[in-house]
Length: 158
Image (cartoon, rainbow, N blue to C red; front, side, top):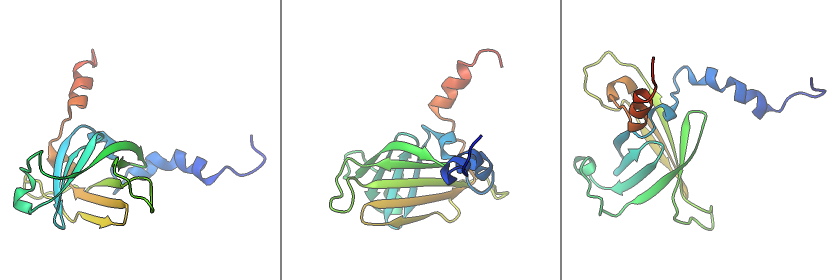
């Protein structure tokens, strides 16, 4: 029992699951999956829930970029409302302590062919923050992470 209204953040926490059933997709469901995406001259190599590496390259070279190639690396920090936040150890002073990358995956089921292509993914870059929205049919990714396999194999009787 409370004598005053609950704070907005408190009530929003209980609505989170309902909000994620729709156009949004809880990106954490794909943790440890490896994906790559090319947008606006930037190649994003992702191991979801772990790291994202950005390379300035061509679309043709995006899938096969050498690990010695110069890149900005972001490490997973936390998830909120189905979106993952990554942070680079590289400083972004005077604007922020570090560079950050926000990743959202939007699941758009499609009856098209079995090929996996992003629909209309986008990115937005600021001084210290990059926001990436990856719009794809998640079921066609066929991404079964090592973590998921381990959980299924060690689950006992199902």
